[in-house]
Image (cartoon, rainbow, N blue to C red):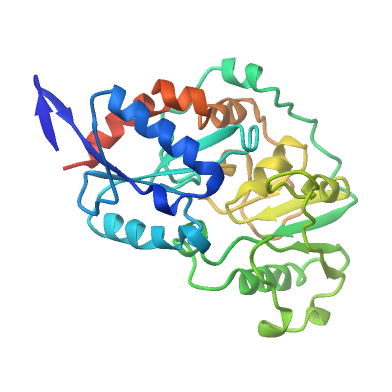
Amino acid sequence: MCSKNGVRILKFSIFPNSTAKNGKPVMSAYAEALVNAGETVVENDMDADVAIIWSVLFQGNMSRNKQVWEHYRKNNKPVIVLEVGVVKRNITWRCGINGITGDAYHGPDNNPDDRFKQSGLEIQPWRDTTDGNIIICGQHDDSAQWFTHNNQSVAQWIYNTVESWRAYDEVSTFIVRPHPRNKFDWNKIGSPDKLGYTRLQQPQKIQDTYDDFDFDKALQQAKLVINYNSNPAIEAVLSGVPIMTHHSSRCWPVAQEIKYTEVIQKPDRQQWANDLCYQEWTESEIRSGEPFQRIRTKLEELVR
């Protein structure tokens, strides 16, 4: 870190070789915005002020990012994470400090509704919750979204969650949907026969898409979605299906705790949706520097 004319200049390191194919233009756009803002940008430097990585799912080409993540976090240095968005998948992209969940920093909250109105998103009316399935959505064991908060496997969490629910509700049907890229093996955690009315539903990839799956079909028969802190909760709450999540979820402001209850909350979702649309940006918006400027002050606070 240095200064010019009294203004602090931060040193950012990007890691382009550990970026997914669809993320490379986004990473390039973010780097361009930093240069235009007068910041210093280098590549593959483990001693910069701030690291910028693609995703916290440390699998395949991104597995090398785990070392970057752990090194910078151990040294109390911020990590900007870029990732596929939900508002318009593969058109909008998340940009968060120290993650992509609700406990990451994406900029100020209580935003206006202008970006929501431009997004094309629709908030569907809340569903009747007397009938339908309870969908419990898995995540990936190799993602920092998961292991930052858990020391158990995703499969074990699913089993324990359904088992504890069954002490109060023996008749609701649970649909277990694993993460599309995370293997799920009942035999490692216990027999599903003990859980009653519980079945496995493998996500099906939608033809001619990069990585979209058929969750919208499952939601048509749902009365409740349980999801720890990943994207399905966002899709559910926009579709009018009540949700239960962990407090680290981006949906926590419109969710309730993961435990059996007869009182399903259906809060107002407009402010949450406004803020969601200020957490995701198009490639051209990222290149303009707007999302970076929204988190610049926070970065200065975190860089010592």
